[in-house]
Amino acid sequence: MPKKTIGQRIAQLFRKPWKTLTNSRYREFRRAYNQFRSDGIPTKRYEFDDLGSKSIVLDLGGFRGEWADDIHARYGSTVHVFEPHPRFASELQSKYADHPSIHVHEVALSSSDGELILSDTGDASSAIREGEKSINGRRVETGAYLQSIGVDHADLMKVNIEGGEYDILPHLASLGWLERIETIQVQFHDLCESSDDDRESIRRDLAQSHGEDWCYPFVWEQWSKPADVIRMPKRAA
Image 1: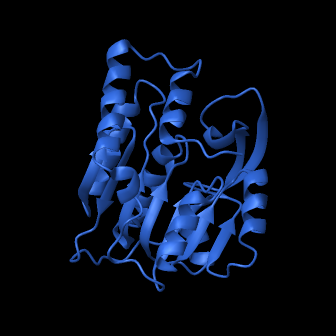
Image 2: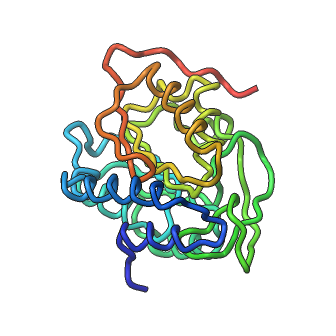
């Protein structure tokens, strides 16, 4: 299946029936996306001075694995890919069967354990959005699950989980886990009237331990942690 460009993805979102964007809102997103492209960020999203073979990377929303592929090829880092969609997870497990440094987890990191009913809509599959088809997945409480796989920090985390960012990032903040992640890339999704406020709340959490590297609202943004933040994470109850 041909890889969709970010522009095609954004266009797909704008066509969703739940989307009730005003013309001004649409123009705002298009300006952010155009500036994102003009500034060369699609390339910079893969460029990190401090990653290497000993680095730990978390990929939340693996889909076809393109981002994990590129990061591992460039830096040789250990990559943990989290993909709750059973078909995509199975494809990733086959793809990385001979890659001992890439680990595929057929779960979504979340604030609690439970089942996910996912809309089965390709790269936009989500537990938030409704779709014509659905499929069952699994979510796990983040602190306990990361502890169970021996991960107590991350050098880089990418988050593109179609609305799940509004659950996982506040939970990581409540655990003290944001402080254990050196760099965070996140794509926020405009789902409802509260999305602006929810995003700003998460950005305030991030600002407690990280600085904003670059930001294109509801396209992509990146935050990196100052070197002097060394607090340990709280453990899940």
